[in-house]
Length: 615
Image (cartoon, rainbow, N blue to C red; front, side, top):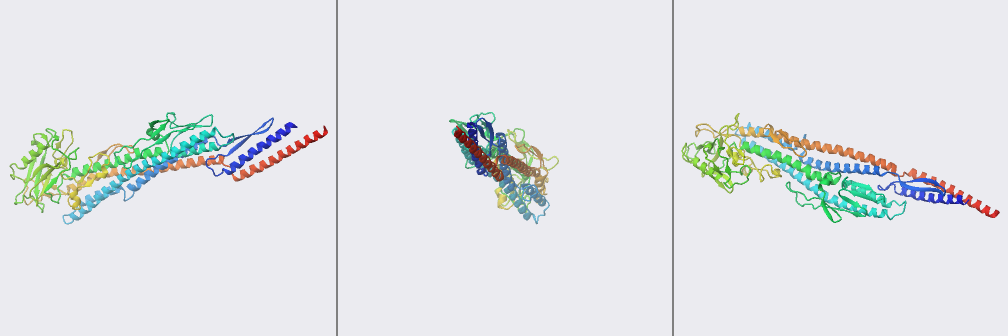
């Protein structure tokens, strides 16, 4: 009967263990890091033995963390893309940069069909549309840099959270070696740390035989994050000012006093940090590059066209805007020998836009640039002044060339007259224009080479990062609210008379419209868009459309990832959480079992006492 007593007592102890487990399960129903404990009963000679384990295996928990990691990563990407899209607009929206481009082209077409009576008003409208378009692109580019800065700031905050979770896991590792069997508090602390990490960073965990987790940054195990009770730490120095050209500081990992750059490792992973690195180093720079390419091409094309034209707003001094590759000149830049060619007409026009020297004579001079003997720009200035004062219709056209304050300049001493420059047939098929070329290979027509009649100007040279933020309309055009915008060409009639209008046609306005909608240009590949040959309007539409597609894709993938995580979470909850009914049933079964064991114990004791009495 001793065996019966032992069995009864052991079974009661097992019942007490079960009672503790069931009570804990009921109490932990709302704890996301707690997993329902399951009791495995084993019948042995000494009675019923209880072994406690968790109801969910590690692989299911790991899968849930991976789905959360992916969902958070895509949520970050979608949030940033949506924020930029708010600024740039959708393809179908009237406020998008693509729509603004189409509106600007339409205004230039209107200008090309405007009579002289309405010319000033329409120019003012064109100026307003051009200003709005430039500001829209600046706002777009500024928004890109703001989101880049926000991504960098988010990395700083997330790294702080990651470091706390690594410390928590290391602390929990230490506790697993101290707690008694059946105490899962340290395991739940480990799980809480791993769950927090899975929101932010892709880690590879290995469960050791002693219950500790060893954490690595990648599958190769090259960078260890947690080992036993020791935790590594990340560090990142954010920058206060973000510009398109700046390089961000690396993310460092310090392990046992050794510091290494893990930026690329984290970038190749998943989670919030990987997403923010993508936004900071791929997504926003690619958008900046696209908008810079578009605006660079626009500035280049607009200035190329506008430099063939003549403004109705007279300028007695015309100042250049650098030369190809240089924002300012010294005069020592060398022109390619034998590649200076074409005939350029220099003329003075009065306020009625007639050719006039101020004395009633026709004032113009055709200069054959091919007669330049070669040399640097200083030599070319000397050559030009010689040609402008040489024999011809007038012995002196009263136009002087110089290099002033780092820019090529043409000046007439008669401030009542304006300087006009013309080419032979710039828009013919083929076009006939002049040519100036540097020994480095950059070449273009005379006025465009020096930027004498640029429509747009900028502080940076083309193809520089952040180009979009620097574009401005030429100051004198701004001052006169668009009156300086050229519409037609200088009359190249041979020989002209004082009765001839110096200006004719609306070629410039038509070509500026075509420069937006028809002329094809090459655009280089970026990280988020293929290279292409298209018009400016088509490329702006591609930027808007590509951003919209990326945003929708991020949204769709995010929704799928969240759904996958929800399903995974539901499965874990089904397996890991005790329902109210289950808790009640368990406790009722346990009570019945305890009653039965107590009866067995009482019966065994009674039988033992009876046997003692007999003996």
